[in-house]
Length: 377
Image (cartoon, rainbow, N blue to C red; front, top):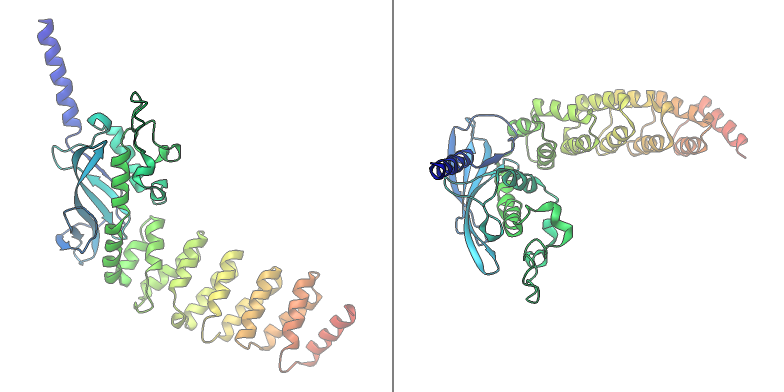
């Protein structure tokens, strides 16, 4: 009876483990949460050694790709012993690695073909998410040198793996981790990026920018081309990012606003953001306005209204902007002439240099310049 009970218990434990790992899936969130209504396949001219050159494209009702996948079959070899691994890798519309799914009955294994535990799959997923992994800097031969024949008792993987990448691998699965990371961040990813870039328009860009993933937002801002027609909704989103707390997103959003889009309305909105923003945003807005064909008078007035409260660097940036656009309106000149009284010698010097280059000066400004020269003679 005891033997029968033991066998029954072992069966129950094994059955429970198999049930728990029946669906081996680890997946991150996509950029936008819309339903997949269509799955297409596309064969790519991929130069890797994976037999299957076809990717699956999962699209929403508007035809925008939500995600991509590729069925991977490759050999993972340890000391001449190879095991075929079948796994489906997924990428976001931006090319970002999303996750993996193992076909029914498939599993990943470590050295000596020990199957992955649930925690190992989770760890693998976390490692594959890493974009800037140390795995990118090494060849597999560097990670796992040939085992020393004089020390046969040493484990070929755990003892030979260099310490620098221990935090970037699943313990006992160097080959598997290395291989899958390079597939996830390799040629397939770059081809997917190209496919999405060709389809990127204002609506699709807006969908991705409304996600909470900064990596996807940056990717989208970097891929808004000069030829793309920017909708009013997308312009509003870009301005929201420009006024936000993330300075890198603000800079990328400003970069996406092409010079020809800097019309009167957009310049006014940028000036309003400038007035209420911090140093870095002020600086990149000034740099952007310098690329516009014209600087509108009411925009100049808003910027000049806060000129007296700025530090030396921003003051110089604004005066350079005014010089570039030949700004000589009475209000701005009056504000700048007041800077001659500034205790900051650098600011005062920038002001005098600007004023002396103007074509015409009124009597009041000339008087201010004369007083400045006498004080500093």
